[in-house]
Length: 121
Image 1 (tube, helix red, strand yellow):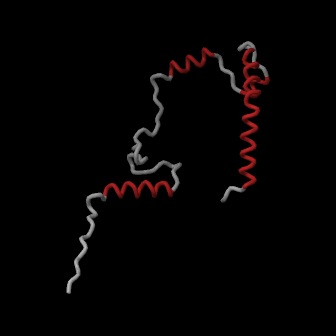
Image 2 (tube, rainbow, N blue to C red):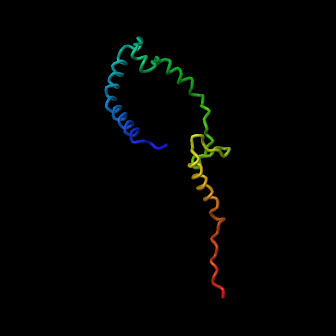
Image 3 (cartoon, helix red, strand yellow):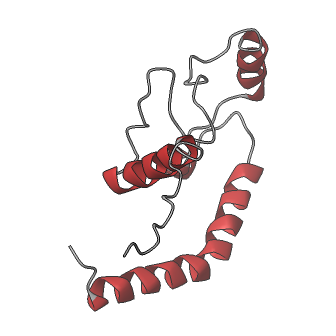
């Protein structure tokens, strides 16, 4: 569906409102975090989850040897994985465009231009 002017205007106004309120929110967050780390206030619970620094350091020390199971076998140029599949987030139009580019590169030497025949009387 097309984007209406009204939705574009509302999106623009929300962005301006976020810009305007960002400094106030930052100051409020800083003031809340200045309080002692042991006491959890209701306001802090609403804004963010507060975790003691020691727990965070322990967690990072434990996770150093563990590597996440991610899709590392993907070609960066064609975005194809080892099975020849595109990522799920890619739309069909992008897939078609990349495939056309890939096929064009493969057929570079195969498709020779035909020689124009001269007139025969």
